[in-house]
Figure 1 (cartoon, rainbow, N blue to C red):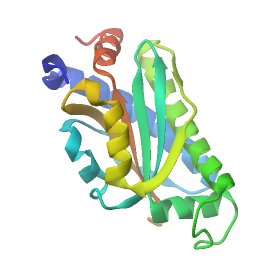
Figure 2 (cartoon, helix red, strand yellow):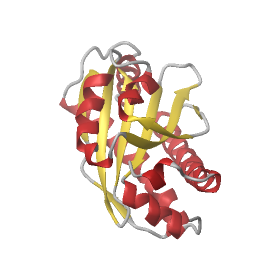
Figure 3 (cartoon, rainbow, N blue to C red):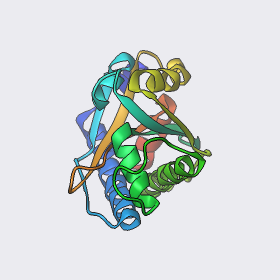
Figure 4 (cartoon, rainbow, N blue to C red):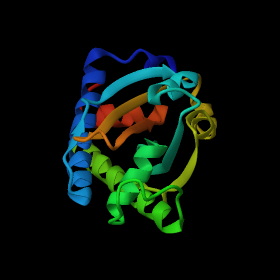
Length: 205
């Protein structure tokens, strides 16, 4: 990642955090309406991390997770990654499909489609927040889903981001239900050039 991005000012980080806050609030509301459960969220963390450290944000490279990945197109291209521990993903499927907790032991095509749609909805909530701050219209790709160890999924994603350099700027939000049955991490990783576009649009340079 370029030096200017690696040394963002406090005002720039605050602007990105505020966008993340609104996006996270929208996403939590949308998800709680879908599953009819209260969703708590941590205040989004905005950080610049070495690419190799990203798996540690979700519990380590060996944790089994379900990941939904979307590429974002437009004037500020970015990447979105929604990661759920395997047990949380199965519980979410149980709720979405009207099953008893614990019924889902593996994902079939319909289960995967439901989880990708959740990724779509959360991404849309974030991108709407970004539009409201910047008036920049962004379109997400069709989501891709994989279940594997966090390190393996993130390696594939981060290889695609490799042209950015050795670091990623991550706007990270953690979601959890009141019964702690579902925990997930949502990452918005803007391309380096996109950050300049976003920050200029919100009037922070």
